Length: 287
Length: 235
Ligand SMILES: Nc1ncnc2c1ncn2[C@@H]1O[C@H](COP(=O)(O)OP(=O)(O)OP(=O)(O)O)[C@@H](O)[C@H]1O
Ligand SMILES: [Mg+2]
Image (spheres, rainbow over the protein chains, first blue to last red):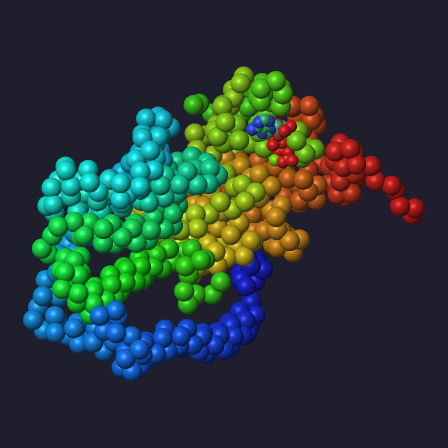
């Protein structure tokens, strides 16, 4: 048939192009790895300088312990199991708060995203609550929930809810109306419209919301765990403050930071996986 | 909806207006199954408006459209879902089990066999438009509506697309309404060419009869209808 000859893209053209691509890619990979190594140089030098300064007595241990001391402290707390226990409590609070706040934010976002009526009824109230500075709520939360787990989980949920809500609404609203017309001419059912067009179209925005939410969940947790507690990384820090154990305090700071970074890279991995179709997240595929 | 005498679509006394601006005023049109109709007309004369009414995307303000509930449409832009692999784009709205097999076959038909799991962003403009064509034809529509589907393509790709669509229409035999600005495209593809003006069909040309004396005279007539006068080159 004429189609075969006229429409198939020439194989010679394609192969020559792809070999060209591999060439440029290997060049770029080399440079990327060099840049990666370089980007770690400054933090590494900083730690070495810090260690030296501590050893030479320029920084007093009560002010800032040497990195090696922090590592030793970590090792000690790991060995006797306390670190895992406290870490477990913190993670559990974050996870439960994230699940609750995330679900509420997502549900509200879907509702408001789809329905102008729901927007009229809900959006203003949600935005007003969002405007309240987080710390201003703290006394009220203590009055409501006491110093129990519930208050901490409430704070995390509240913090997580807004970014998920806002980005879900935004994602749904940004959907190309032309694609919804397409749904009409292909006879897509309402369910198909939601699962095949609206949710996948809103997903990039929703996942951005998830990344923000992870960051603020962690922030909320740090604040929540300063409320009287006997478990959690926050307790570890408060307790260490009583006894001026700067090594433990620094350790808790490092742990908070590390988990924040890990959560963010987990969210990024999720984006790369779920948004493989998206040019901005594509990896190892030709553009 | 009953189809009169098995026509692909029958439009009677159609009226469409946007606010006070009347766009379509008493338009009549009949397309037979397997007939390829091209529609020309100056920019803004209401071609897209007519097509959207036929597609059921817009309501009509008067008259009737007697046609299939679900005509297939190819728009000027491909309108592929960027998050769905090609076969899912083609099978959109179809039952998944048989949809996939049919979609793969349809992709084969438009010369994209083996690309069914690729993402739309990896396609060129012409390839994407071919997928849109596959998506329209896989439903085996009795009426195929094309709104300047090749306008964004380069001249060479456009000629290839003409061959492709001719073959596919000959194979599946839907009634076709092609809106275009390209007089040569209309002559190359259509059995009948309509010129739209003043909210209705101003003139009709049967291509086979008109081109007996060569395509040039029809071309001149059509351009004349569209308000373009060509200076005859001295022989
Ligand atoms: N949504 C709308 N609201 C108001 N006026 C509209 C709307 N859509 C189209 N029109 C008007 O209706 C008229 C016909 O538009 P239409 O898009 O059908 O033209 P067309 O023949 O397809 O033009 P073109 O060849 O440039 O695509 C134009 O004058 C346009 O301004
Ligand atoms: Mg138009």
